[in-house]
Length: 181
Image (cartoon, rainbow, N blue to C red):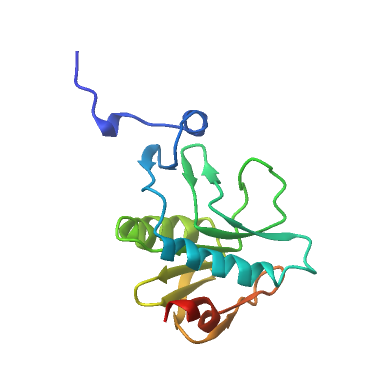
């Protein structure tokens, strides 16, 4: 009888649906989410959601969501901090690539957000990926250009228009970061 090793276990979405608590599933590996994010993290997420939501009054196709499951495939389910989803019909989780994904960096998630999730979102053709650094009050905006992300810049005081979204939303990073300066 052999020893069961972590790398020998491969979970699927069917397993994921049964778990209690907060998890992500990455290539069949269960990743426990950290305890609830710090207040600054949650407050930044609220500011971004509020900023985008206020631009969607005339857009019935899109919605901005926080902490929603994005089922990439049967063995990968991610939970972005914020997603702008357009034309999604599934009530349980996102099945289509969101147009915008925002991840707010924390020390425990930085490597995963900057590398692994970056690659997944790029491969799945998420149009824009924003990585927020709350301590520096910087947002790195990446735009999908053909098949690769092209860094649009580091934003702190500027407004960025997401031209290639269904509803043409923008983010005013000066407003988003104002209360934290």
